Length: 96
Image 1 (cartoon, rainbow, N blue to C red):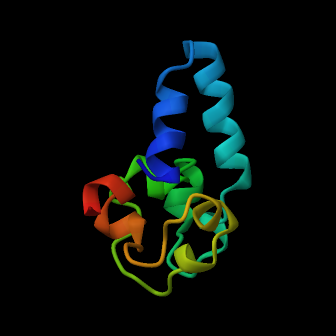
Image 2: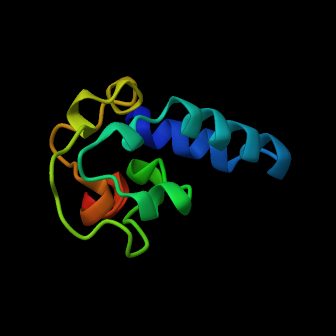
């Protein structure tokens, strides 16, 4: 099991309120909103953390750049290099 899988397993084993806080902490450290591909629609829908949540819900339709390989959160979980552009291609687990 790698760091990403361990983090997911850890979050999934939490009680609902703890899990919500952990997800919010991840979202707070997320840099998706700095990417050239991120849209106003994504902002309005509060879409973030695509590496975990998967594809944008019809807000991002074109890859204009990808910050995934440089994302501190992705790097801390050892993801974003092999699989990326999560907003269009799906989560890390979906791409594996």
